[in-house]
Image 1 (tube, rainbow, N blue to C red):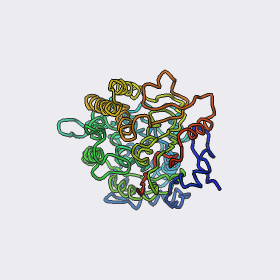
Image 2 (cartoon, helix red, strand yellow):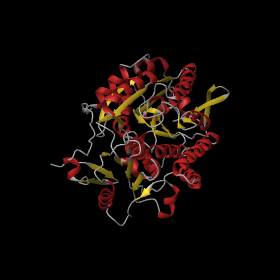
Image 3 (tube, one colour):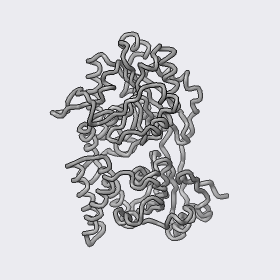
Image 4 (tube, rainbow, N blue to C red):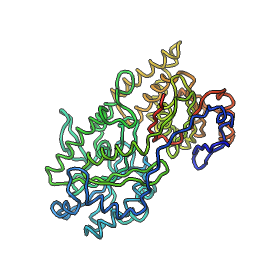
Length: 462
């Protein structure tokens, strides 16, 4: 009997595309998912416990409010529209209720700070999706701008560190984050909400540039890695100075960390000191999001789930597949990219990289030249989007020319030459029909794996 293998494509779920003989002949390599943790359904009681039984050196929130609250604002810092925000919608309304009733903090003293980092400002409709309509209409919202309304809190060398003034001027800061694997910072959540979340453009640029080496990403830059990761080490230094400045001004941070599992369920909720609570959650994350494979397959078919909205975000799925596929193997992305490129910087610098690649007579040499070019460009003038071509050309260097493929709808034919992806079929065909025809051409008795979530930390056993 054929196993159910599915891909998410926008609002569609595609199944039944892997041929039965791939199962019969052992050519389909399944994901070995971790054992599911119990789902947290009674959020209020667990959140109360998280607020009063902190991880690490922080005091319980009741003591912080008693000794440090001066009738100013309490800033709850949340992710912006580029994150799924499942945890925010589940936890935030309960947190506000607890602040109101248990700690006697009225709505007018609660301010939501949206940690945009370098991203654009969230729209009103996006804010309602992030926070929930009721919360959006009840409390004040501050959207971080990395260039304006900033307060200096310290220095890295001679470079000032600046953070959002509304957050800095709050009596208590409560970052509300979910902890998840991230392709260059290692593990997102916790301190990431401060840097890049509410930092200035120069500080964010400095931190992000730590990801680079002359050959692409630096050593230990990758999914799930925080120890020895130069991006996370820079983050620790920057956020450490932010924490010191807040304490010097008698402001307190109480971190709330959560984990959403592979089925979009809340399975972890704790609170406490910013770094210690994050590190504790990062350990738990490995048990929830680490996926085993018996071997590296010849082909990885990668869906992007909610990140398939545009070509830029879809890159998370490409990176996930890169961690699984064998060297010289094929990656097929299946993502609608309904919003097109999603980032003009990405498009611009992909074109520059491809122009450099196409100058070379030998594609392998051209890939290395393109990678060298985009690394140098990013080092000289970092902007969000510029790091993505580095990832693409680094992956291309691993799989080889002609081995990145995509089925999508949002990128026009005129732009196909701006990327090293081979575009398969066209939007007039049903996506499953395109997928089946691709498999007829490329499967050819090869081993294949299907990955439909870019957040998996993939561990091939050979």
